[in-house]
Length: 130
Image (cartoon, rainbow, N blue to C red):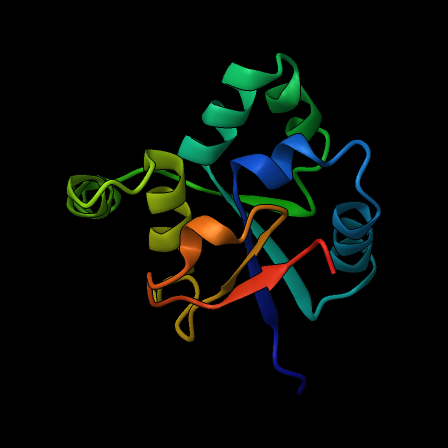
């Protein structure tokens, strides 16, 4: 049995879905393999929608490939704690989703086109600009 690779897509990455080769490749890999699983926090999805109307509809078409991480109290706590340190709420939501949890016991990498905000936050990042 192969180890499943888990990736959390943040707001900038969701915004880049339509034109970034690396993001498109990751989505294609997840669609073609049972060993790659993609996650998107609802908070990040709404942040992306705020910047580009129609992202929610686009993600809705990818429901079999892109799994939503619903907001809950634990996410609110993470967002509040990191927010006190100046971390953007959408970054905090991605950090929370990438930490080990009941759906992703080993945690996930944040797959992002903007890796800088995650420095020093204690989670793994896959830079989709490389």
